[in-house]
Image (cartoon, rainbow, N blue to C red; front, side, top):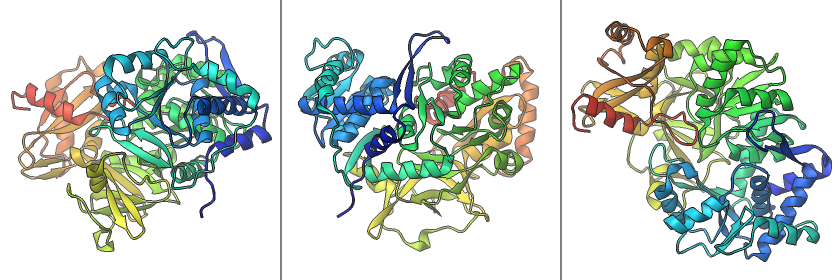
Length: 552
């Protein structure tokens, strides 16, 4: 029998070792100088104990699937750790995917309970979220006219009952259901086991090298839930987490300086804005030791702008992974700027680094069909482009109620399995992984297959290009490659004909981009809702078809 595994034990240990250390600080009000409400490790542990007792009283017990729709703040941390302690299963859906998709996700996950702010409960009643499955309601707010207790009431009820006995969950027990953002297909509910979460925590600790007492500013709230296990203090930023690209860099800077933030997580879109803002005013953050960028490939110029803002010895890390497997590989700014950038600008793709120690990476031939079982003969040699496949303890086993997606994404391998990332890339001679684009985004032309990220690197090095996106217009095999370009602000008034000639000349210098002869300009690209960084290429392809007078 396996030993129990539960991340909540890390919070209990932190509360015993560092009871008076800041665990979580959340902003109050909207002014940069506004107050923060704070919880120490001891207070967070006791509060989550009280919530856990209250949840059991309300019928939310071990194994209860519970939709968690609480805004980033003290309630999110208290409830998340309470659910872990109980052994219940939080169901996490990005509200930004739209009410129709939220309804479909909850229908698939079939939660029995919903803990949410009043707006979430109103949406549940108006749009049928969780209809047919949700039977227990808890409101994270002062009033609950739809029935069920409030979180405040449950906490008050459980406060006198002392420590909560943490569920002795095993490594294979279901810990959470986390839905993908739907940026590369329909949102899918990823089944996290307690063993997956523990392996993620170990991998993140090794990757970051954090020390107890450090301060984290996570602009993607779910990543913050690892902080107590890592001994870090969490400062929740004053921003809308569903729109990271709109985060106010001045407010972020104020928070970094006020709390002495040592670690910051951000999407490339958020970090791009911060780097542009800070670089223009000579801003520096002496306390900032590391910045972690994830959610989409980060362009070298973003790294270059951001690096001077960090303290001495500060590092920018860009881990690679997905909701189903995180982290997979990592690279830092020195290797990007000193070596791999040049290859990216020649069309080599984006280097995402070396696999983390717990992950095995392989590359197999590109196929849109299931691969039933693993065979070493599937493995391609270094340098050949194919689909990235991973194996390791932080790789999730499957999706909730989606056998078709399981068959497409998982490969049986003895008693275990491998996960198909859906990304295309290759391994170089040094064992580094390079990413060239999503499998579903490859452009199949009469002259061969083009890989978007590989091609875009050639054009992105033009000083007038903020970013570009390669799409195909037409049927696979006969598609016309079209480069969509978003310009830097100062280039928007430039002569478009001359600019197009310069870009075509750039492309013509490389064999794989020489056939790209159509360029369209667009102010702003459609992006994913989670990180505002993944470009929605299918939507962009339909726009390009309309601009060219073709059928989408």
